[in-house]
Length: 455
Image 1: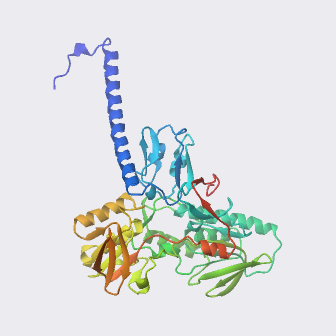
Image 2: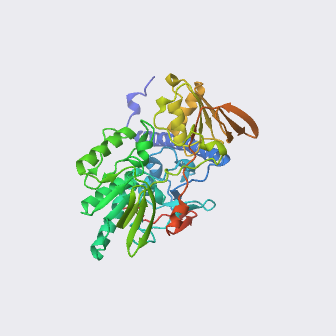
């Protein structure tokens, strides 16, 4: 390359050179933005065509009149390309994959983003709770996923705040005889935080858990990544890990250490059945017998009631709704129903070469739904390798001991099947709420209160 003569680089030519450099840089930036805008538009169009343009849970709503197109929300989203800029405005291009982190709202410098439940056409049932997570029943609280918000750090924060409010109220009330000041139902993230907060407040408390300590997380598959952001527990402080992405085993190990070091009171294998409030005291019916408490926190989560297909053969022993030990399934014909993260992760673990399984993913949707990019890529790659067969727009119609009768795009087909895994979400426990008197609201794109789940 021939460089200009030294005489060319003079003070007289400097303004021209600077202008040329600025124009070149501007052109490069605009070209990059144009390509990014095109990619985002294609992703959004694809979501609309696949009927995946409406989010299912808590998600951002963007006011175009306030959005300045700075891209802070795009950069803040931990889940990848869910938010993108289209025509210099933020847009939710992959709505069904949003899990409600809320980082976008916090990052926006123009207050253009609000977190909302439901959409104008798709309502979402949410128990009515105060900023302290107390229901319409005085002394009864809801924390964690049961209240409509996922994520471990949200559940931990809610469990702590509910106890802080309950403890303050108990100080002001006349003490009525009861077994405990506080009973926490569930020993997952919200329940653990609530138990530690109760201990810190000096309350006579007990956590009960229908399964194992850790709640739903204890039943997740091995090595499942379940935490990507730190959470702060009462007494313990911020849980820190060597890596940014924390697996089930790492988190369970830390929780076990915390349980031993703090003496956290958890009674496992105790199923909560129902409760009633009499003269200010909650009387609980459990599988281990009756209990009573002045305050109760429901930290049950929602995964304890998986959504079912509603078919006659669903009661067969080969049908299950979770996967804990993939290595116990070898040389089997396995079908996984679902199109979200849980289904994709199960497929990825069951299709490993050393297991020798024949794995089929059956999804009623035309594509992956609420599934992050990483999990989708793994399954797509496995399909290319011949380890997995993906069948979209497919419904299971009959379940038999040795086969499934399916309907794929209107065509009836029979496939061999030894085990059937169903991952199609969980039922909102609306009947459970109404039976004990908790008010339920149906949200149609209504904003989350600014104090809901915040410090």
